[in-house]
Length: 94
Image (cartoon, rainbow, N blue to C red; front, side, top):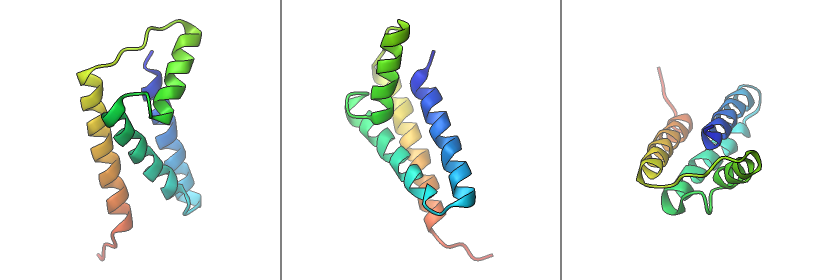
């Protein structure tokens, strides 16, 4: 089970729903980008979503895995969430 991926997906869905009705949903998107940044730097040690996933994984008996592929995936997630946040802020005329 990829708990960090599931939690990230749920956070992204919550961000999309909140952005539709409320403008403060952007803070959730910034928080997701910051979470990815923390995961790139230190793995799941500093990341709130990573910590929650580790706690849930220990409760259901899964063995947490860390390493370079996870850091690359976190870097990709950070890049895409940062670009999404920047494009949301920038005004486009058209």
